[in-house]
Length: 528
Image 1: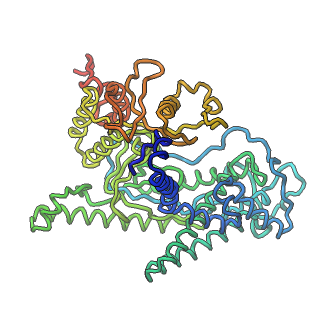
Image 2: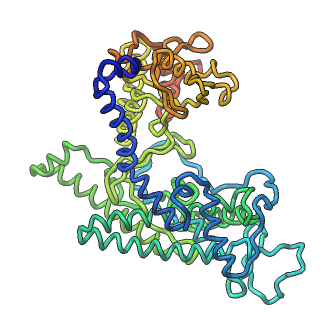
């Protein structure tokens, strides 16, 4: 609506009816967004599953959700409930999941196997619970012939035939609930029952969220029902399971390209010479009867089916009670520059999409020109077009150095917090030790000076105009003004940020970030 928020008093004096309509719409928009994201419905589902109020589900902590279920069951089973804060102090971080090294470059036809509900399954399968942990300093020790679960860490837990833990009992119940809702969701979709779809989708989502919450709470150092042995045992069993499967796969001659916590990426033994990519023009040519194109498409489809059969067979063969493997997805090609938790792949099963993990396209503090450039480079990388990839990177960095990129593609955004005083002024010192050194605070202050509203936690948008001074000069991006009110930007600053991000990709093709900025490769005597 055509209302100048920076002159609201004047707008109210001149057009009160329009301002009231503006305010109503301003209040309705957040609710529309929440409904579109299904936030309210999903929080209602979490409240129903955890047996808490909507307010607790929306604003409470994860431990409150888990507490609600455990305390109810503890009361029913006549188990004493420890006081809040009675857990032992945490000594250092618990070792996390296993992450397998990844070789830089392209890897064709990758089957991705995923452990189904990994941590909950481990907790159920090994009866891990505060109530089943065997304390080595206590007199209540198991008999010599009594079966126990011994974690790779040495921690021991009683067998469920002797004492079933509260947590495994709850997790089994939640898993059963999720299976029911997933089956009902499938049925509702078949019957085109929109109400049933919304209900069962929200409920299965809530159950999944709650199940995954258990590990985080029990691995913490503050929860009343936990002990360090619980979290460390869960991750130790997880590492053991995934390393054991990787070892068996490699003994069989299969190449494990990568793994991360609960996923394993395995090279599929597709026929030699199978293409991993098919260009759109080749698909069109094949449909029009081109024999050579048809041969390529047929070879690609056969490789895809071979990967699918391979992945499903592995998932079935390596699954066991406390470690069920699922064939999650199939990639026709996988790329990494050699760093853990950073990779990209072309998913071709069960749907088709580009999978990106760990790179700047996933970060909210990036700018659109960087994001678009990285996605373009990924397209070249997955097509094994290294020369085009490097040329694109060099051209995009140079365009920034020459200030030839539109400033609309260089907008940065950061959250800014501040306390609103009784007189309406904003105090940023409660949230930041040196507020004026923070770009987002200076942008927020500039907006406030223009009469624009401020809400603590809001994101403020800006463009860097001079990074050579400290603190760097930034200008707020103002939607109501032409080109956001920006007349220029620091091209060198943006070029260096872009080069740093792209350099992680181009290193696999022989170019680092400094060389992208320079526009040419560095040479030495050893280069000849």
